[in-house]
Image (cartoon, one colour):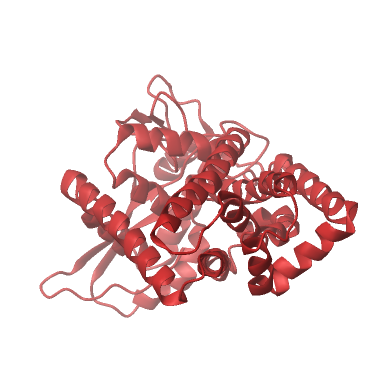
Length: 398
């Protein structure tokens, strides 16, 4: 996470800072040392570390009892080695909440696994014993190093490889299909013109391609969900909508990638069919006669670049875990999806035989209108904007 020196507030000389599962040495190197010559009083007001993995062989396994013990050991070292005046552990005991936890480990009981003791624990956890020994100068408690366990699901690699193989077989099965794929990717205007004039491949190939592109899209969002499953900002944004059901569904999918992939796969196919139906209905307002098969093919072939993502998806989760280029990756994905949408709208104005301005204007206007209605609904029903804004401001200080 990012650290920055607090902005001074007139009349306030006591500042507390929250740390969520970050390495304490990183905190002291990037933040605490910058306050050494400051006359204000600083302390760690909330130190939180989930332990939903339970007992493992060592602290190299994040979010375990051993990892939690190592974290709090580092918190006390940071406090002693800097001008911080103290620290506060978030909670002694685990507790139950109203919403499904993400950061603290998904479970249907809504148990927040962030305490150093469970509600019925009598002091057997390593993290509790370590904190107790450090605070009372008792017997030193050692934390085993252990060996880290692989967190990346093998499912991601298998699914990406399977989709890649099928796409390669499909492209190389027929020369015409390979030529159509090349033209659709490099010369989309000419390709859409052939679709309009009904001089293109059968709908069967488009349907097969749709199933593969839906798999690529579903896999990408499944990977992103799984990576964000214990991101504190992501959790707060989901909670901002104020829906128990919505929080539970997103949490379940984020922590269960196989089920998430299946549902997102079905949803993606549904979106392909939905946009083709909607835009075919819109064709009734233009003079040119537009066949549904043309709109259906455009809705699929416009998103052909999704096939290019599949090799990248085999390593996407590993790259995200590095946390070095995540913002760039998110930006690239957003721009990539916008490019696909632009390709689709280009195909629409070609087969409708109308000026591009009309298609872009009405599409953007309708999308903006629907988005505005949805956002206003959540703002008035749950003050979602206010909570999201607060969550982002809090996260920017972490």
